[in-house]
Amino acid sequence: DSGVTQTPKHLITATGQRVTLRCSPRSGDLSVYWYQQSLDQGLQFLIQYYNGEERAKGNILERFSAQQFPDLHSELNLSSLELGDSALYFCASSDGTGSNSPLHFGNGTRLTVT
Amino acid sequence: AQSVSQHNHHVILSEAASLELGCNYSYGGTVNLFWYVQYPGQHLQLLLKYFSGDPLVKGIKGFEAEFIKSKFSFNLRKPSVQWSDTAEYFCAVNALSGANNLFFGTGTRLTVIP
Image (tube, rainbow over all chains, first blue to last red; front, side, top):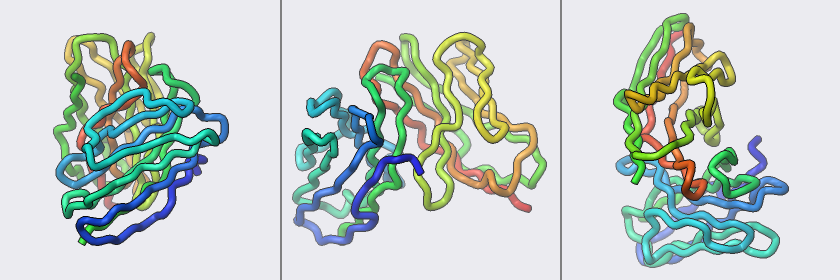
């Protein structure tokens, strides 16, 4: 168990809809990262938050947004969903922002858009 | 921008065979290097990491990796694989000077036949 909790485990929704994925980091970790894993793109970094502030942005679509709350949990919001958004979404956390802080991953949320 | 290449998509070995998975990265500056493993249905787990020093690093479960700077490579090795090593293996890199977001390779699926 990595200590990173993601809910829900599975999500099935229709095109055009909006969903929210939730992540609770390991106790004491201030950084949260979101990754998307799809068959054709592999693991893609989406966005990172540190102590409530956006720290780095990767290949995140404008239809997607995220935030980190004062209790350090994070939510990834996906809107106007398309079939191509079907993927496994991972959250990871680390205790800092330095490049030597190992990432600990959650079990992921599998999103299926029909 | 960083990029990571894993040339082996699927490797099939018999138990006790030796393993070497290739990883090459592209980045002009100093990087940290990682290997993560994802067992079926589980989260990504850190196998080993290289930050600096001895280019031969040892990780968990008998895995090791060698950083060859001149070849931009960080190949993963294990002298004798077990059935329980069946998993997907991801090489990842982050830039020493950048935010702590990892860039992953596309992964190598390892199947070990008993």
